[in-house]
Length: 219
Image (cartoon, rainbow, N blue to C red; front, top):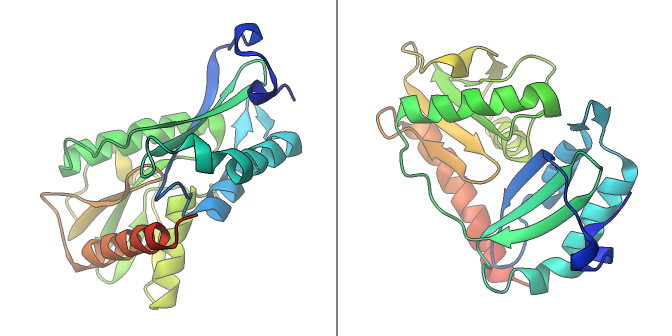
């Protein structure tokens, strides 16, 4: 697969982006690296499964180039872009928090992400709800999870919290839930400002703890 990092910049002519991943960094490290790469393997590019060459290139690029490439934005966002020619490139940008964390705003983001998943196979952002003692993910049964969503499932399993799925959850902010929160590869776990609660607060704290531990570890 053509590799942007192995070309002279003047020779690289990017095509139309068909896959864009945005992954949160912490002190020039990728805290959910293995989860993100597993989710990348479940994605599609122009209707075809992601190639082993792309997976190997992404892993190598993270291992070899992230430390120097993220100097200006050590706690920024790693962006992976694949175009319609099969060319891939990575870059690091500044992290910008969500300006609006209302339930309606989070649901709109999740709905847009589900539309993206129709082509790529994986939604990078999903809306979650709490119904009783169950976490409900706005993802259809059988659909692969993003890296951040798989983390939430793992955290829930460690404390014995049931997890269910409802593929229509993000179409509108539900009214039958005590809590709502967004799970995002870029923004982590974001409780809805007008529908917070203990489950989402605990998950958000756990995610922040992971970022802090990664920052202390560094490179």
